[in-house]
Every structure is written in structure tokens, then in C-alpha cells.
Figure 1: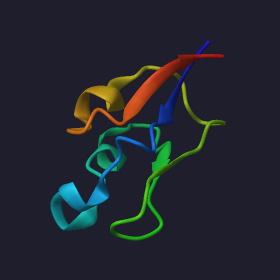
Figure 2: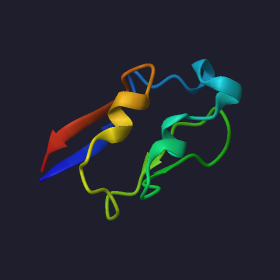
Figure 3: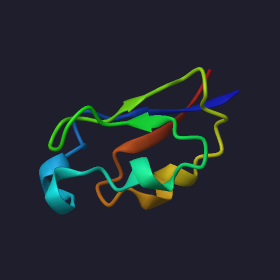
Figure 4: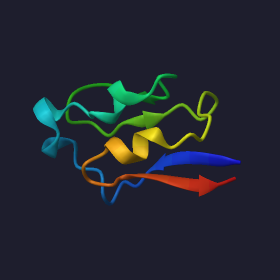
Length: 68
């Protein structure tokens, strides 16, 4: 099974418009959540289907697919 994780070494919310992670808007299942602007997004793994669509949206390439 595939899951998406946030690579904290690559994630730079300050580079996203107004500090809002653009990938949080791209997921149909809303697995990505960002508590506040400029904070790292968090993935709700219980909802992640492993489709990896969000990995193509992140401009920093900070969302990565792992095998579970």
C-alpha cells in the first residue's frame, strides 16, 4: 500500500502563496491539513488512499510516496 508523507527537509510553506500549502486544496479526500499559514502541513494517514495526486502539485517536491 502506498501512502504520502511530508518530507520536512523539503517543505517550505514560506514559498507558497501567503504561506498556504497549495497541495491542501488539491486533495479530493482532504488528507492534508495546515493548522495555520506558514506551518507544515500534516497528513491524515487514515484517509490517504495513496493516489499521489498531491505529490504533483507541491512546487518543492516535499510530498513523497512511501510503501507501507
